Length: 114
Length: 111
Image 1 (spheres, rainbow over the protein chains, first blue to last red):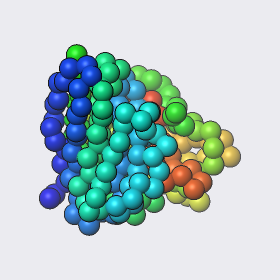
Image 2: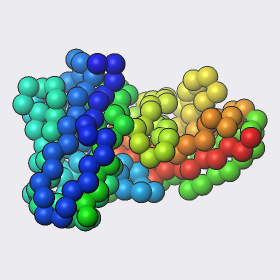
Image 3: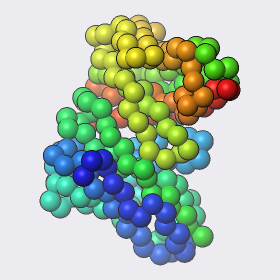
Image 4: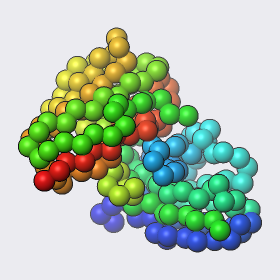
């Protein structure tokens, strides 16, 4: 596609439920990032994929968070047993050469845990 | 954790004026990037400056980098109401593979 696509754009879920957030990167981009952004704050790094593997998952806050990219393209961020503190905008970005070049961001998924 | 800190946190100017935003960071970097964000959603890349560069221009944007002071500035000349947005600096440090963002400057350009 022309840009990074994230679905859904909004997600409301009940505390304790499981959610999946999807990211379709720009075709051919090998690097893919997930970030989380709370109101009034800058994006906070979660995980970075180079191809199919997670090259850096140091930003995942705890083991309730997991992300996959099985074929080196689409990625899914999975959150188990959601908590109200997980409410945020989840941003996905892709780039052609990792952090050496510009990253292209999707419009994000606004997750609200009630 | 956030490596960069933007200053000021908020800036309000009149259309036609120049806007300057500053970014300070803590560790040595490979490159520093500036992004713009409208309405809290997707970020748009503005400009990338490498650690061996001191100044870079792109249209109405001018970015400087002082690695000795671990700081960068973004200048927007002849601002327009459409420039109203949040501006973030992001650094890439050492062997790190991710962009680390600051907390941003909210710019408001009044018509």
